[in-house]
Each structure stands twice: as structure tokens, then as C-alpha cells.
Length: 198
Image 1 (cartoon, one colour):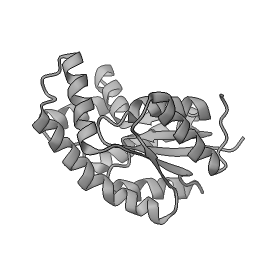
Image 2 (spheres, one colour):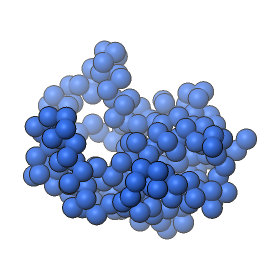
Image 3 (cartoon, rainbow, N blue to C red):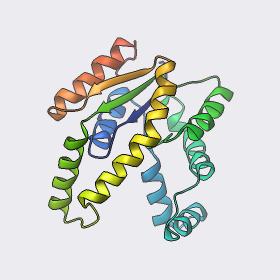
Image 4 (tube, rainbow, N blue to C red):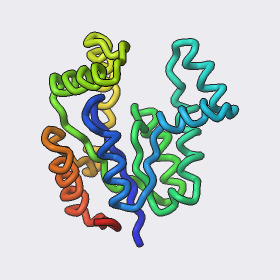
């Protein structure tokens, strides 16, 4: 069985988390989400969790080197040997270099980058709806807009890097959940990647 190494990217509200889980299941690989790893370590009170908590409590972003160290550790675990789906990493070109160095040392590379294309106004509408449903006060339109600005400024250069390698699949992220999932499957299968679960 060939390994499948994927990265899923998309703005907040693009459905990236949901689609990532479905795609990972279909291709028989674990989802490696930096957000989930951070939260798990914080909850378990690990040394890493304490380090991350201190950084976040200071209002800072977790440094690239710390994030990359966490991902390297996760990708070294047995269940990721046959592939993985990265969600939330790499989020800038420095992290792309870190990932390239790690995978390159193992003679590996990413097979595909799934880019969920969602218009900005659609992202804002989806997040605002979710915030209302979940009673989240931090999802103001201004906060959402600010997060989308950061996504656009940090992620666009990553897409350029991977686009130059010819591994980006731009997926229309507007439609029903199933329609979008099928578009992703079709794009990955066109690259010769094989689903393990129908």
C-alpha cells in the first residue's frame, strides 16, 4: 500500500476541519491538526502544553520552531508511517521549509495540497452563523475579518510554493458537504491516490 501525504488548507469557515476528517478516513491516514495537538497537550498538562500555555497567555503566537517540533514528533509516530493529512501546518513559508527538511530526510514529500476555495463573504457568513449557534462572543465580524486577513497574507505564499511544484488542487468550497467531499476525492484520485474506504 502506498503512503498518502496530504495537506488541507482553507480560510476559517471553509469546512476544512470537517473535510479533513472525511478525506483522512477515506485514505486511511490520521489527521494531524496542530490545534488539536496543542489542545491535547494543554489539557494533559504536558511540558509542551505548559510551554504553549505560557506563550498563548502572553498573547503571542506559538513560534514556528515549537510548532514544527510538535509536528515532527507527531509525524514520527507509527500511525503516520503510512501517510497523514496535515491541517493547520505549515501555515507560513518558514514552516514549509521545516516540513521539507523533515520529509526530505526520510525521502518523502507531500502528494497533494487540497485548497478549499471559499469567497471571503461566504467565510464570514459561515463563521458568524456558527458563532450565533454556539454563542461565541469572540467571533465578531471585525475579529473574523482580521483572521481572514492573516490567513490570506500567510497562506498565499505557501500556495505559491506548492503550486510551483504542481501539487495544489483548488477545490470549489461552496456547495453541500457531500458535493465538496466528492470534488476532493475526484481531484486526489486523478493524481493516482487510492482510497482505502469507499
